[in-house]
Image 1 (cartoon, helix red, strand yellow):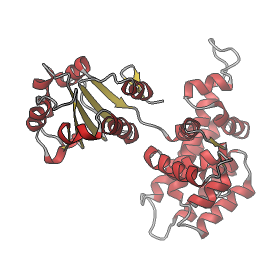
Image 2 (image 1 turned 180 degrees about the vertical axis):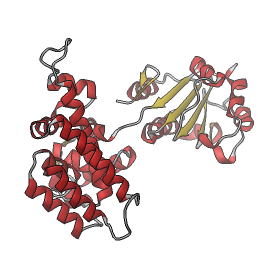
Image 3 (image 1 turned 30 degrees about the vertical axis):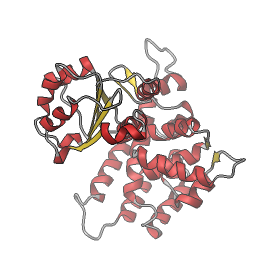
Length: 348
């Protein structure tokens, strides 16, 4: 759930669906998906097709001036209760502080929306506080690698699908944190599902997206976590023979996140004054903001690795990551060799 300034993405959409509109929406942050969803709803649903011709304007920050946008915002709608103005790529705007002159007396008949991507508006500026007073300043929170599988599970449920845990992890490992890309791939899978089937399985993902259900970052973490030496080395060999399908650069970030989470879980499950028996898996999951189901593999890893070993592993992964990017290594060292060495040092 995306949340900022006390309001969530879901609440913003629900508010728009009830036709409760604000004079200004300033959408910013690192997660483009939420910005696009809100601005697309405003662009597609507030005005009828007949009203859009005279009352809907789209600006692009790089090609526009803030004074030009303010001038448009001060116009009254024509044969419509509202006019809609959307500013895309608003991060490219110059002199955005001048928006404050419009915010002192905005028109309630204008719905002015800024899409400010890959950054945030400095809340110390007066323009930020003025936006919050008369409209909505919404910052999309970043989504982290260890949250993606849970997000996929929630999203598929919202569109009437069920995704297997392994399939969710496969998609998360392969597609990363780009929610727009994830939604696009899930919607493709939905189209090809038979009418009597709503389940996304690892086989479906493997067949239609090209991710191996047996050789991927999720299975590699599971093999390392359970000290399954045979499977771990099979995946390493797969990387050596299929470097276009699976690379060290895909594996290391996921492996790093896996062991950092495992170490955090180990700390949380230690006895403490407030928790004499340590946190349960459920309470630890709430603190880490990860579904308990997804922590079960980390729980297993704790049984195989001491605290000191976990710290050492995290250090080894960071060294391997640096070497994979060309630091402290030779031109003849490749990802397969680095991964093979790292796997050996973790497991032995």
